[in-house]
Image (cartoon, rainbow, N blue to C red):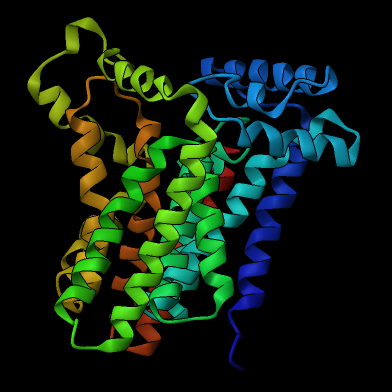
Length: 359
């Protein structure tokens, strides 16, 4: 059957959605600084909507956090009539993330890679714990993965609908969290260079034009949206000098250089970190285009964020999908079908075990 992995993907999404719903019913969310900030912003957004404030005013509710996240949460509350429904927005982004990871894996590998990567990604502790919190972190991973998937589909010369969806996804990213650009610029340049090296292929030339046309249209739309307060970007750039989670006694060159590398086990778990390290060798055995695409996704954000003084582990959440894809590609490279199946089941069982161990 052509789409035999779709039921497994739907089952995975339902598993997380139901568990998140039960967590919601228990009213057991962890409380943190960002959590409170976003709840406060959400209440401000709702009060301004109720007061009939114009759209321009809603754009500048908080210069650090654009309004789309709060608008979607308000819409969920408006449709259901329950304030608790707003908290399901992270589950919505989790669904988007898993579908996008599956799509990228299927496009750059095959359906097996896609489904394994989706399962692995969903059982990273940093992913499923974030999916029950009211914050923007999961939107970073979800929207960046979606943009990369749609870019690949447009690059294959697919229907007009994918070009429209790519424009909408880029605009949504710009109106949700500006950090997302770090995770998509590398794959975009990688794809562009690949098309440039194959410029004798007329089809590829047309496809890269479609991708860049979508990018330019999205940029114009975002420029219009931010036109009335372009100083937003100056204030955001100013935040790079804030200390973040690094205490005064820990500000050393080595600590900065390895901050995000040291954060990986906490994001993946040690079991998946070991899988990732073992899988890295397989990445360089893949075709040149796939190798460059994954490296362009993973390395630039890591380098840029390492050079920034302000550091938080959640800043690199956009790299977790590519880690899942690398592990999945390594599993798919196992030649023995029986051994491949055992390893695939094993990495998923590890994820399920650590999921229930944490909750």
